[in-house]
Length: 85
Image (cartoon, rainbow, N blue to C red; front, side, top):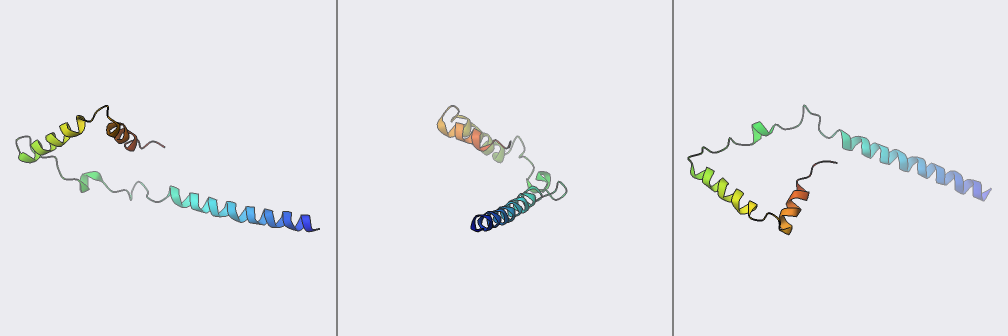
């Protein structure tokens, strides 16, 4: 009788644990709908004009980052940029 009670309590615990996990997973998939997702066009500013100082600063930052190609920091940046699941 004691084994049956332990078995039934274990099943009940497992049932509630699975329900909690399922509820958590359902919430994770619906944080933002495509309609609610922010538009990068509305958030980000336009790129700087080619003849501006801001463009030269962007270009310098690009070249400084590109100089790290092949180094451990470059490889880490590539891993960080992976968005595939």
